[in-house]
Image (cartoon, rainbow, N blue to C red; front, top):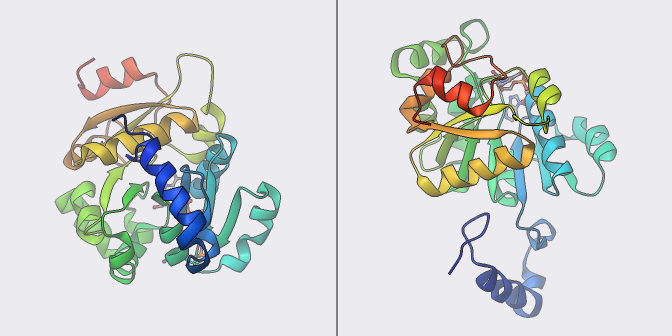
Length: 245
Ligand SMILES: NC(=O)c1ccc[n+]([C@@H]2O[C@H](COP(=O)([O-])OP(=O)(O)OC[C@H]3O[C@@H](n4cnc5c(N)ncnc54)[C@H](OP(=O)(O)O)[C@@H]3O)[C@@H](O)[C@H]2O)c1
């Protein structure tokens, strides 16, 4: 049976939808009732989080933006309309079939600790970069152990895929959905199904996903590495990073 976007067959989704409509609906919180399988929670709605959220909304997704101050995101969701909403990180995690993490890296240890249960088994698209001046000790850890390993440590239990970290948000804004060749976005992760979800999210945002390897390969496109800061096509990026064509 063919699996769709988030790994659930359309038949199974239909059965679940039917059950939800008859038995479960009254017990579910309003946000979980959406039938749209393209639902993403975004933790951190600043430069990169809001840029990607806009692109996914354009592609038909429902997007839940979260921060520590969701009341400050009201203007954003009013502008973006009914496909968007805002609330707490816990609500964003529960809402999304996948979750984008787009907060300063120093927030990862606490975020991972506080939301360990919600993040268990979730596909997490991890866009954070570690910057010594902003993120302090955790940036030293990244320097020592690598960014993929550090994200996996703090977001333990989640299916982490590194993606969307390797360019400035303005570069994503400018190049999303550009005429062929599309801009390539390097991604890395350990779980094949999570990688598939990330590929779809990258593609739906208007870019070409390039799977560079497992999480440890994320170092090849981490901030300051040769794979960082490009708007290359997929063949060009593959060549730069030594990924098989
Ligand atoms: N800027 C870029 O072009 C770019 C590109 C690729 C990757 N990145 C990486 O993406 C991350 C975000 O960068 P940004 O430039 O988008 O930052 P930003 O504009 O400062 O936005 C950060 C967002 O995270 C929220 N936030 C901060 N701490 C939080 C916490 N503990 N829990 C929940 N939400 C929290 C902030 O809202 P509150 O303060 O209200 O909570 C804000 O919405 C960083 O790791 C950065 O290195 C940035």
